[in-house]
Amino acid sequence: MGDDQNSEYRNEDTEKPMITSKKEKIAAFFKKFTFDDFISTEGELNWVFIVRRGAVLVLIFILFYLAIMYVTTRHFEQFAHNISTTMGSWGVALVAAIDGMVMAPVSADILFPFIVQSRWTIVRVMMFMGLASAVGGYCGYWIGRLFDKVPFVRRMIDSIPDKVNRLAKRYGAWAVALSGLLPIPFSAICLLAGVLKVPHLSALTAMLTRIPRMGIYYLLFAAGGKLVSFL
Image 1 (cartoon, rainbow, N blue to C red):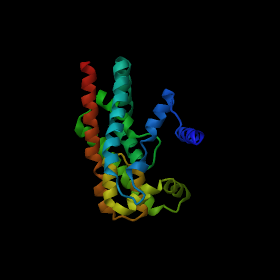
Image 2: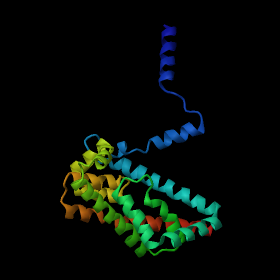
Image 3: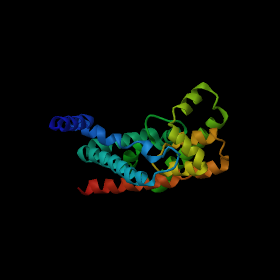
Image 4: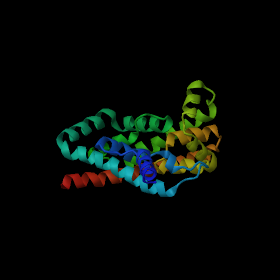
């Protein structure tokens, strides 16, 4: 009897692998932040996960760049100046538009620390990042609507997770609006909105949520930059 109990305990131990190294702990932590938790199998939004984990992701993203700014202040200021003078407003707008149009491996959000350091105004950010991102999303919409049979576009569409696909089908233009504000793949939703033939004016109106979204992100980074300067 005692041997049976011991074997059960051993089986339970083998079913729960121990995470010992820091690398494994960090990997396990970031595995929690997947879009699978944001969207149910029926395509419904899980608001608890969106609010909780979205806030944590934004905080991690901001703290990471603030740490870089704090440790390498002089070099970062020079690098930010070079970025802003080399790219200019239209260069930033182009990056934001491409990010909204196709599923780019790098987000336009990486430009925020440099933009804050270059002292852009919030109006400039909303125009050259927010509006440009919305225009890019609208282009992505028409790519999905007109060219969904083209092999390259078809591969992009097929690579989108099923849950994101269900979200777009369930909410239509509202899914586009939510993806403009929340940590949901904006370019993928815009592409799917075109494939699903969501009314284009409704989709365009929903994409304009990118404008206030970029303004809010800018204010968050600007507040963090002032904190770094104070420290």
